[in-house]
Amino acid sequence: MATHLDYDHISGALDFPAAPVHLTVTELFAAASRPGIRGRIRYRPHHLTSITSRAHTYAPAEAVPVMNFHGHPLTEAGDLVLIPLPGHTAGHAAVAIRDPHRMDRWLIHAGDAFLHHTALTSTADPSMDRVERMLAMDPSTLTRNHAALRSAADQGHLVICSHDRGQYEHLAAAANVR
Image (cartoon, rainbow, N blue to C red; front, side, top):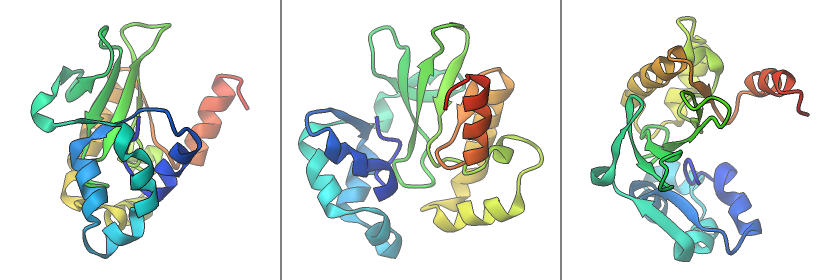
């Protein structure tokens, strides 16, 4: 699953040339068209070439209700879901997996939908907010995305992002993983 096709998130797909890549159709289109200066910086043509033949894409109209989102179940059991969260990129998505130890809880990898764990609290870091808005293709969606992810966290779901080392360290210590 690819939360999005920014070079720092998809370059590893080159190491797994036979693996399918699940993503939103909107993200695949955005990467192919590379809109504006941001698109030319974030999307690399050789990454796109390496995944196009194995891409499994999902359109917004196909989404079904999952938690407080609309998403695309990737398994028959519905325990793995691609959740569109456009904003950071046009087709950005989160990946949710049902917690195998607590079936009422989901583990949500939100990619770059937020960059620091304080986005899920009432004490958001203003400097991180500025960075998120600068990097976002559509900054107007960030507040809504943060609220939806905060709501999921408030309901007991575990919500993580890609770039918060402190959040990673906290979770790794709690799981006794290094």
